[in-house]
Length: 307
Image 1: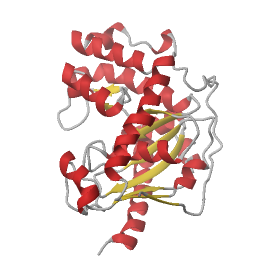
Image 2: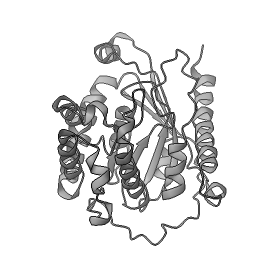
Image 3: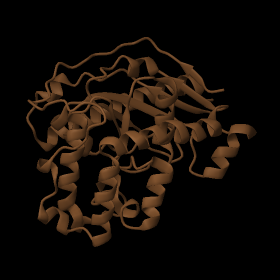
């Protein structure tokens, strides 16, 4: 069975405000007209991308979000647990438990496998009892540009791959950068308000395809801007042991596959960074700091597991 180990809590809660925003509470994600994309932002999308975005946004609001979160916690987490219970090792969940339930949590993790955030969400659903709703910002390319992408979003993420960003990743659709401005505002709101909101984010911006699990790509400034704008609770996560071949990954649970290890670190104290000027240099400093904390968790794993 999966192994869950705690670590000594060492949590620092930054004294920050939500800048006058009202906490909208769990399961209520109708942010109103102020977070509608402008006509100029929406116009850069194709007709199918506009349809896909509207549909997935609806699935991430109100009662629909509650229903899909239940599916995610029962069926999604259930099959992932079935496929990993012999090789799953989880450390530091006490740091997540120590976080406030009244403010969003931003999980910042390294990115080596397509399945990173799926196993992280399973760890949370199966080992914590507080109500939560998950959001994973994703590349709009594929997930929002075809019916197949929508199907994958449903089957793999229960519509939680939201909001979409088009002008990012290995093949950015730079002509759609205008819409990404709206997606960033929406993501900032999810990180700023909403008890139970858990947002998964990869600071590296894309999947690291190198062979060394303890190497990392440079952190992108986007996560720094998000943290500076929204001031969420930030918890670093290090993940290793996952592959990208789904059948092989599933069979490894019974044939002696690599052990999966998930480390949750203490909540980060970002007080000094949040007080700095709102500019790109600050964003990069925050991103680099976050990435260093993820790397420190990797060092813990290396000391325990590397041969």
